Image 1 (cartoon, chains in turn cyan, red):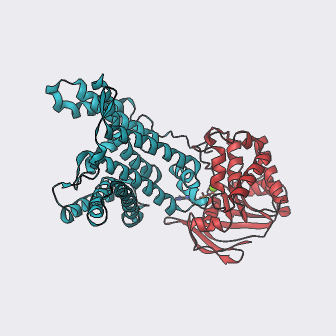
Image 2 (cartoon, chains in turn orange, purple; image 1 turned 120 degrees about the horizontal axis):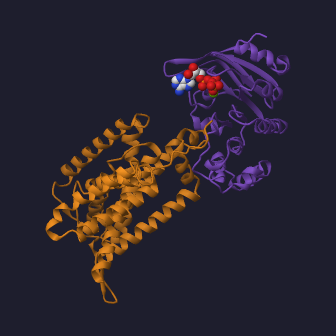
Length: 298
Length: 235
Ligand SMILES: Nc1ncnc2c1ncn2[C@@H]1O[C@H](COP(=O)(O)OP(=O)(O)OP(=O)(O)O)[C@@H](O)[C@H]1O
Ligand SMILES: [Mg+2]
């Protein structure tokens, strides 16, 4: 019983992390057609900024968490302003290459200014304790991660449905020019998308640091690649698809690890990607690809 | 209210409109007639700022041709676009919220939306339904209502009767007539010459990017001669 519940939580928390990052990618993609591979460096930036704030200002972990969120939002919005605004009207490939370029430049900056090896950052590992519920022992971090992700998704849904800017973001995913014709500034919508994306990156950053206890230049890159796959499975540009894809990927990963015999452990990735391939054969555009109904045009 | 002088409109290297003058006086309905590809949508796009153009476009005497799309909307230019372009993934109500996004008086906006729902009961009944599920005629009404909730100074209507059944077309023109009675300034683009001439005060005929004739609506009769001329039919 212990084992089953532990593995279920394990799967959920992995899924939650992928879903958080995938949502950050999807919200930007849905609005401006940009696959923001520099999203992982926003996560890493959150980690390094935490080390700086912890060294210079305070050791209070709650203040540090808010700091991580704030710095990730800032980094995301600044990246848009500096790097992506100039290529906003360019085609998909140009945006993709710009994002990769920004990602590489930032990783190298972290290498140069930080350190090529992981730097210890243990401020958040207190989140990871063993809880005993009745006679079941579980990891508190996994509960926090799953819970925080579900709350974040709920708040995001509220924002997208109840505020004018949120509604404008959903509208912009369909017809950005028409949103501008309604007098809503394009820069505001896009900055809003990057801010939300940064906030989600910050949340993911906190949990990644709590698990690793360290910060490294590439700490965000691998999770973003996985989240990218989650977006593809769920349907690129679809927010529910990103969440579904993230959780599906996390659950599959853990299931494969649990079900495959120990000696086949190395096959886990291969098994996961075989499943991904099968899903894409079944639904080439992803499970929840945004429907193409743009209303009756003629 | 809206004065356009020597307007040229470009799509990339292509010049779609070759220097035209249009004047839309306050409270009047002016129609721009023309066949497919004449440059009607291009002209409206230059007014809203979505197409590159040269020449002057004045709203209440002020040159707006350098302003962004959003700034022009805030000055009171509202468009019901060709093909409607309603936000199919949003509810009918949220489509109207988008239309009124520039307004500061949110309470008054809610009241106005309620008033438009009285005016367009089909929309009111479907206010929480996804706009993509509306029929073509309902979508056209939504596109017009979305333009109106911004309380515009001037309403631009691009082929509101496109692809609609005759009864629905009649309903749309009835709405235009009502708006005129309310004092709305309208620039209407149409291919349905007879119905457009009937509601408008002044008519411009656009022919492959230049204005071939213009005058008071009465000068064009019921429009049949004009249609023959444009389509090259000789009776
Ligand atoms: N985005 C564009 N890119 C290139 N050419 C364009 C573009 N939009 C319009 N054109 C060209 O400009 C000319 C005028 O087009 P426009 O859409 O203004 O005509 P219209 O009078 O609105 O026609 P319709 O009645 O079919 O809507 C056409 O020759 C068209 O091919
Ligand atoms: Mg047109």
